[in-house]
Amino acid sequence: MPCPPDVHNDDTRITAAGDRNESRRLMEIYDRLLGCFGPQHWWPADTPFEVAVGAILTQNTNWKNVERAVTNLKRADALTVEGIDGLAETELAELIRPSGYFTVKARRLKNFIGYITEKYRGDFLASLDGDGTHKRAELLSVSGIGPETADSILLYAGGHPTFVVDAYTRRVMARHGLVSEGAGYDELRSLFLDNLPADAALFNEYHTLFVAVGKDYCRPKNPRCEECPLTKDPAI
Image 1 (tube, one colour):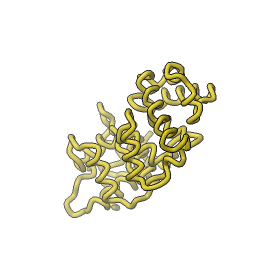
Image 2 (tube, helix red, strand yellow):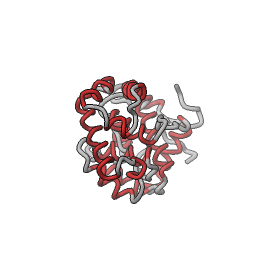
Image 3 (tube, rainbow, N blue to C red):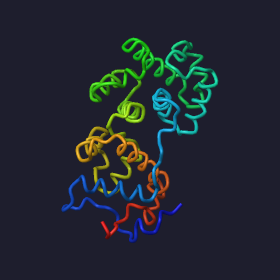
Image 4 (cartoon, one colour):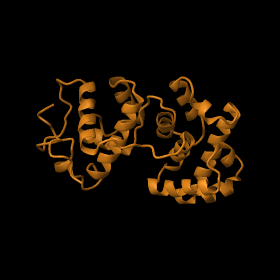
């Protein structure tokens, strides 16, 4: 679906112009994407705990598969800390089978639940309270939870102002010359954290807008560069 015509009006993409600081360039990108796609209303979940489970299940799969796995957990009345804790790992694996890598993800979910029960007596919301940097370090200490999953939990379930970096973010930023092709997770995350206000709502929307443009325009193969909303707008 094309963007509104006033979002872009020529075919020159955003470049790392030397006379613009990082903050302004990042906000230009955000404004153009928001003008094209509108608010994304992500993450789709009924509870913060469902967000966390979804963040683990979405590793190496698409969202439709995650939804099927989450639906299975709900039907089994197991989408709670107590519910997952009470399942045998094999039972859990079968319920989340649609998400792929289900035996690995069952172990990761069990590791996560173990962290919640042992450190916070099963109180998931308590695990999100406090300093975001400290909470992030705790999550990263749990086997199977990497930076993207930890940041997803903190941002979307806990409302902490951290930035989620994924394949869409890397691809868009690298193609527009804002980072190198080999930029690592922490480098990209720091670019946003260091140059934008510490605003969870902004980071939430920004990340999902990268997903939107990455799916519709900035594809791995056959990208639609001529139609992309990240073309130079002389009005900015």
